[in-house]
Length: 113
Image (cartoon, rainbow, N blue to C red; front, top):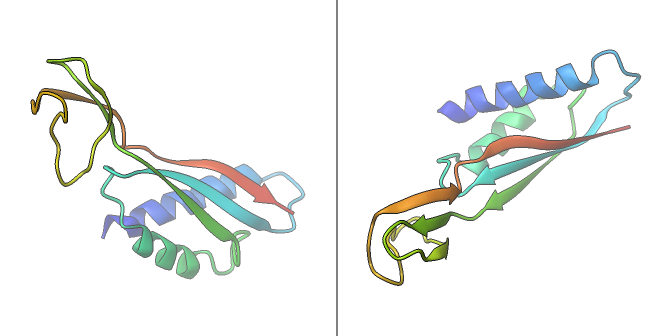
């Protein structure tokens, strides 16, 4: 249920960003979410709809961009995208991997009116 806390944080970021500006309403909030972050996007969308009521973000569109898991093998040097259900180097079958992308979770942009 950490999506509830994440959604509260997103709305806090949005409210702080529009504070002091002449904003009629927030039209869109864009998020980047790594595929290895563990965030359940359906829950995030649900909570955003509930928690944004009576805020500048009410009726805003929540756009989610999923980022793939990118890793580098420390044994053979291979680098690329990995399936989160099969974490091993496709070249040497090693598991000595460095995570280069996939845990991200951040507000990329806020579009206002």
